Image (cartoon, rainbow, N blue to C red):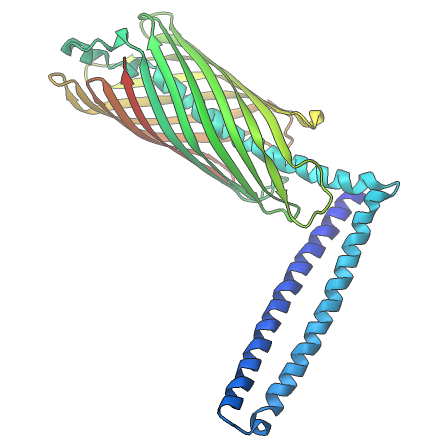
Length: 393
């Protein structure tokens, strides 16, 4: 309770300090405007006695207010210094723990952004391992793509916004970067692949203590899909991501380490069925589980674990299909429901939804695609967009 009171008091002082600084700046501008009026009057040889009484009284009043503001600022600074001086006494751990507590709470929001990043990478992987991605009907034109490795790159952009909800403070995050991957069907039953990515994560907080976090995110994912029969399959994906960055604080002079050095581990196991018909409609319902572990190296008790169930489907349909020149344009819609079975966040959502749309353009050995995914739950939305460029060799 004492720590919480200190946090509240520091935030209140910071807000009041900001307001007084702003008010002081406004008064300085008014003083400058009055000085300009006096100079203009002198330049015109105007009798200052006709114009000075009111401005002079206003200037005196402004100077008096300015002095009062300075005194209030000095009192606030002294009060803040007295709080910070606790660090140099026997109770020095109080304020440090206060800041660390706020730090851990906000770093958990990086873990929330990590969930979206992991889902985006896993979704990309599932698409690449799907049979519908092989365009087997085009192989009759002479381009048997199953002989080749599919190599691709995807510039990616993710934007998230969280309104204040329960224990979750308001914050927003932007993630952008590039994904590079290769995948191949070894035979009619087994597909394998690998994805590497480099992303930049920028989180902005509403907190008056921790202002922002900037990270570089390096990740590597491995995946495989196995078809038991012609259409029944199981799929597994494992991966990890390294977060390397730092925090930026506001109005905290002595603070814990600003460095961010975290590792996230991801894994999922899915089972599904691939439906097709003579019109090349592809439907893939699937169900499974995923696990995410976010390792906060500096604060082991705060490591985050999530186990969730996933159910949903993807549907693809070609709107342009030309065998003669191996050309295809495919539309894709997807929807998944994620239910949180187990976690130690203590404020993680139980259910959230993932909706996606994509258009694929395939011409001979070249593939282009543009996709959009939305991750939704109460007072939270994340937008994820990618551009796909791929070929085979």
